[in-house]
Image 1 (tube, helix red, strand yellow):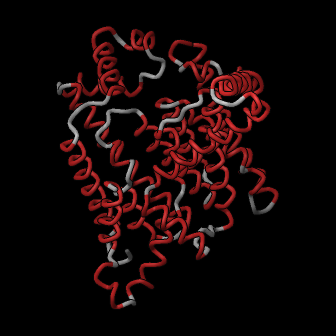
Image 2 (cartoon, helix red, strand yellow; image 1 turned 60 degrees about the vertical axis):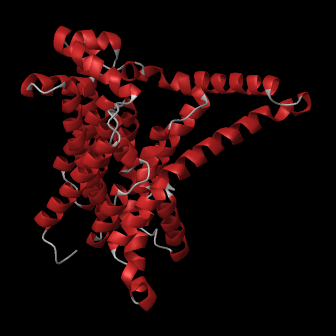
Image 3 (tube, one colour; image 1 turned 90 degrees about the vertical axis):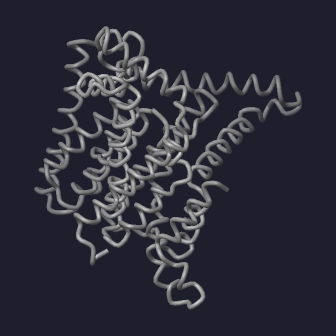
Length: 387
């Protein structure tokens, strides 16, 4: 990696990403059901304006981007959606590779992170989808990169960039606002003199307060232009305390009456919780893929999950937030789509680090010299996708 100029490295990464994106769309030219709805919404935005779109769907940013590109370039809506998705996929791959570098503070993980993400068994499938989740994932990882930069070198510019990326990610999917509390939660883990910690805390609070004030101003000016999830933020404590437990208890009652023997009714809630957690585990493992899962196990065995001390707290909080969202959704709705656990899977960054560390040891073995290049790892990951 040290022998490759950064500009050439990013150019090769961009080219590889676009080629895989084009292949995914040629291999699967059909539009997914959600994509049809986004395109119809974009058509309505072009003919009736953004307010009409908000009347149908409270998160129309993705469709608004498609409509804007259609108006600007005159291309069909479907092609505009593909161009936007291609840009978001490139941002996602670049942000993931940079996030790995910042997290481990090691440039040697860059090619492994990029190759393993490009060969991701589930993410590649979404390259052919017309979905807003690509924007959510890309901007969320971009905000994580800026947050790690601020941890390493505190600057208000990094915090402002983090706030902007978080708000844009929330415009795609409001769940990103949960990650907006990360800088405040990290205030207690700061190092340095008392004055430096105070200035950093003041800057963090000011940036978070400014982001919240911006949301408030938008809500006051035109409440319709805020997603319903954001408008209902004051009701979140009530939902956590009352609605989610009530939904889980109702599901446990249905489970006890329809599935369990009457003698097992007293453990219905425990049995349901175990089943829901099994869904989360299966979805997560299925999303990670065979190769990445094996590398994760290798990293655990070799102790390759150790992070620089300043990044440990941030990474633990990111994992916690990414895990909390699907758990709450499972308790409330009792189902889980694979896309909902993708942020959690993207944060399981042991595979690039493990592959980077084990590659030199593998290459020293004569039998394995011919199959130890990063491209062989990538081909193996692609094979695992079809398996």
